[in-house]
Image (cartoon, rainbow, N blue to C red; front, side):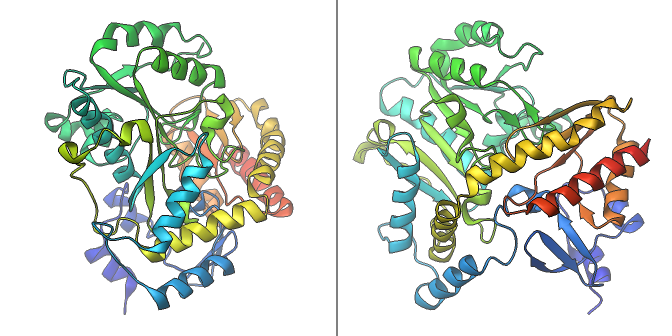
Length: 418
């Protein structure tokens, strides 16, 4: 089969301009091992963004593969509507135990956007359940991304991406990211103007991923959580990209020592091996969904046994191999290693959070970031810049020597791109 020809004829590539597919045909990835991906031509690439931030334990991890194989022999799928199965029960209990308090119920789905969609619907119906139907608005950070379903787009609207869908959306109340983010007063003023109509605030904790790895202080998140608690507004934390060790804590919200009402997880929940996500909801919210207020929501593959088995083994590996603490240490070293880039005239900032390192250029010069991406591709490194930001989010299992090589490649590519 001519895969390249078939690809052009039939595959719709997400977030990809048509012109790039003919001018620069994408590599056909056929195998993964550790931090590397291999294409059909035998080329080896460092997966420097963990395959869209989800392959936290690298590729081909034997324990996760074994868990998938074992579960596939026992039970492939069984719905959770009026039925249950052991892996869903075990994974829900494990996720609840990872929260600040374990009084939680878990709604499973297959992807991060669906987890966010469920969180928004839960928060909205919760107000109906308790006799507050007038509280229908959501607040979100300006520039945040929460997924591509319509509810998620409403709280993560990006004009360049979502303009055609605007007639279908109910826009969120936006909290601007200012230079002085440690000062919560701007956000507080906006929130207080709308407090009576707010049902919930949703945030990406500490780092806006798709916005270009924009990072904000722990104090701002802590102040937001305190305001929500004081004003009876539910706090939804979207940990889909930042959860499971990426920021140097199991969840990014832990840096602020807060206790969210609803937590959305996905991506690395199964180490990226199978599609699974979850919406973790505090029991004081869950208990309002009695027989008169059933949550009429679900997905066919909600809590799929094989995906849940992969998730359970992923959590075991995290615990037994001390993944989170190691990621924090590696991240500190990586950002320190990249600091010399700040001396270059084209570089505005080098920043990091856990095992995320971002190099922001002074202007939104897409030609320059494309050159950097191409130079790294030629050197065997796969990444996708975000506007004028080049970032690294490798698997958390990357070794120190591999990390040193990756950092050096990025430094040289930024220098060579001019």
